[in-house]
Image (cartoon, rainbow, N blue to C red; front, side):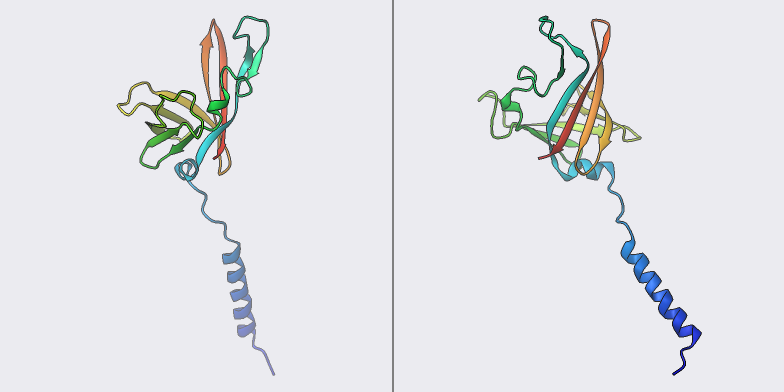
Length: 162
């Protein structure tokens, strides 16, 4: 039985296309899709340079480990970013104050390059902007800088999926 070049080429081409289609990578998610895919909870918070906040000579850089900045009742809090531009902050199972609402709602927006996220009250007041260092399926890292007593401190917060 003779096999024609045409039929061999057709079969080879079919295998090539099947292999190519099978190895195609899914389209990457947009930053909005990554942010809204999970609820997020804080897993780390730091300040650089370290600061002597209490005037005791002890320099603090790990804010998350410090109960003054992140008491135990805040460590189950989480945020849910909605694709409608709202973010819902939830106190989690452990509220720090019984009188606090379980959830609060604010607005969020990206800048045009999606490298800065701004969170504000529903009426647009009190906007706070954060640089996005990393935004993946498994982690969000944001930072902002503030001058305190003529020293510029960078606050970095890392979130993980709830």
